[in-house]
Every structure is written in structure tokens, then in C-alpha cells.
Image: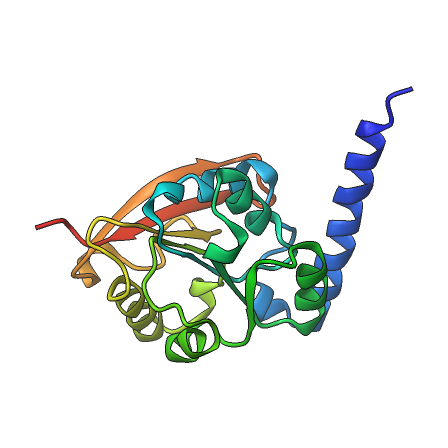
Length: 199
């Protein structure tokens, strides 16, 4: 008898339990009501370029759904820098993905992330931090700082659960465009791309 569907369901249930524990610990920092769906995680990971040789930066690893999708995309674990504030999430992530360069700390402390990993230039950024919970000026400063560490044209993909971009295009000196609207996420998720034009 094939027990694969049962194992898959069990893994998904374990992920939900881990997520709920993290959410109860700090709902504002988690910023969602359920883990990112596999469909959404794969779409977010699709912006990364395994052939670039540069590391990918993941902000807000959570239960590891997007981390897994980035690795499945072909990014070597040693080339993934993944930041998470929750100690509970971090313990599980380090067990599941032992070769990924995890940083337990603040996604806004880019200099600290570079000191911890030795990596300060990135191919792309995959972000699940709850930008809509933060003041506009703080959001803008983070995105600009991230783009300073990337080549022109390379993307930051940001997940959010509001109808509008967390960075309004009229307030930005970089490109802001929608990537996708994923109804099969709980709640439905919008993905946005931020990048600097290639001159």
C-alpha cells in the first residue's frame, strides 16, 4: 500500500503545528495566519537564478516552506542565507536544512547578516517579512538597502496579504510591479517584485 499521501499529510500537519506555535509567540512578527502554501513558495523561489553563482537571501524563513522551494529550485544550501527571528522556528530549520546559512536575528540588520555569513552581495531576495505591519519609511529603507546589495535588474520578491504593494510605486525610485496573485494560499497572497532598472 502506498503511504506517501499519508506521510505528506503528516508533514503538512506538523508544519501547521510549528507555525501556530510561532504565531502564538509573536503574531505581529509572523504576519500571516498559516504557513506559505507550496504553490506560493515555488512561485517566490522562481525569481532566483541558480546559475548566477551569487547567494540568495531569504527573509522570514518561518516553517521553511519557501526555504525548501528555493533549494528545490537548484540553489545550493551553502548559497542560501536565511534569516528568521523566532528561536523556535530556527531550531527546526537548522535540523531540517543543516547546510543552509541560517541567521537568527533581525532582517533589517543587513550589516550583521553580512558579518555572520561573510556574504553581502546577492542574486535575489525572497521576503516573507510582514512589511505591511511596519511604518512606510522603514519599509522603503529596507528595500533600498537590499537593492544596494544586488545587481541592477535582479529582483526582490515580497509576499503580502493586502491589495496594494507595501511600497507604492509613486514613493519609490525603483521598479515596483506585481508578480502574481495566488488564491490557493491561506489567506490569498499577492507577490510583488522590486528591482532597479538596468541602465
